[in-house]
Length: 97
Image 1 (tube, one colour):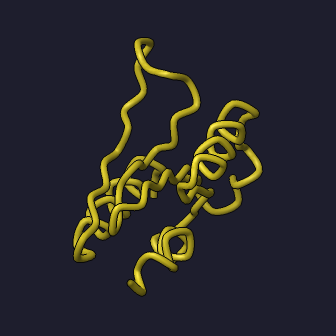
Image 2: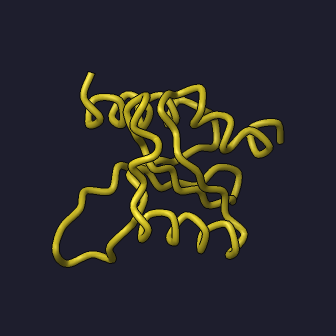
Image 3: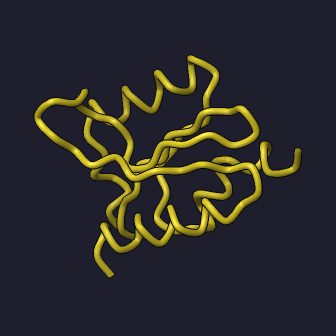
């Protein structure tokens, strides 16, 4: 499976959660560098998820790590996921609401 396929699958599944809106961020030269692959909102809470293939978690760039940290400091949830299950772990507290 390619990272793009994994990301699409996770977005599709996240959007099936009641109260969740998630989109894939497609990179371009005109956007802010380091944005996570998936951004969304669940029960009024913002999240950003950087997707990586299993075994590639350590390939997070400095700018990606800094962006995930900024999201957390602003009150959102963020993290690196290699599966849908890990996406759920990042947003797990909001799912229970």
